[in-house]
Length: 97
View 1 (spheres, one colour):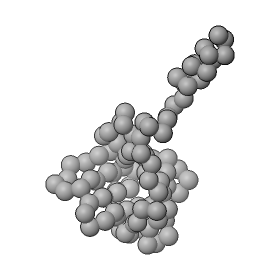
View 2: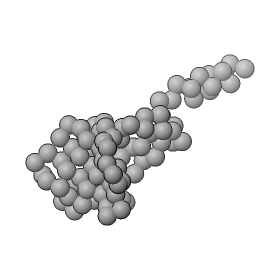
View 3: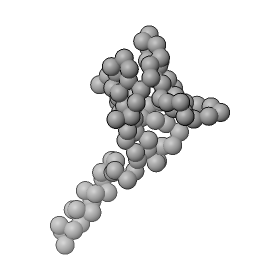
View 4: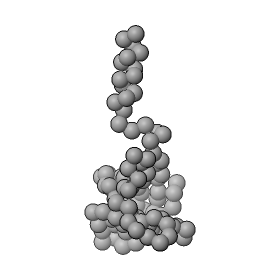
């Protein structure tokens, strides 16, 4: 009985389960690599792991595709591809891995 209760408590305290979101890794033409997390409970943000740092980008209005911005980073995703603008590096095209 105690084992069942402790297992239930551990699973309830897990901060993020695989079914709570989608994770996608990308590699860019300039050599940058990042992972994007699209979380079901937070649809207005994209959580990005870039250069060893976690950054939350807010979803912005766009007519086509999706655009996320924050902390000097812009990620644009549309039919023509994915483009990352990061600081002074400029825009670079990225591909999902």
